[in-house]
Length: 77
Image (cartoon, rainbow, N blue to C red):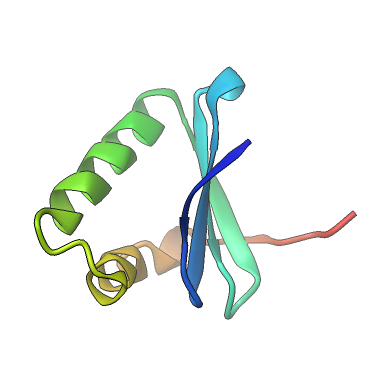
């Protein structure tokens, strides 16, 4: 696992062995897991959205668009 993004609102972890990305909303303690082509498309869209203005506010605003997909509660074990 490798954290690729971390802000007050979100974190994104990469799981290279599973070809996956986990997106978690820290405020709601909910997340989702993207794998394969979906993970690749998500990463490409995030990089394009960040563009030259890769500020935390811009990236968090982009990630807000995925809130409907964050349906898995975060469980600590």
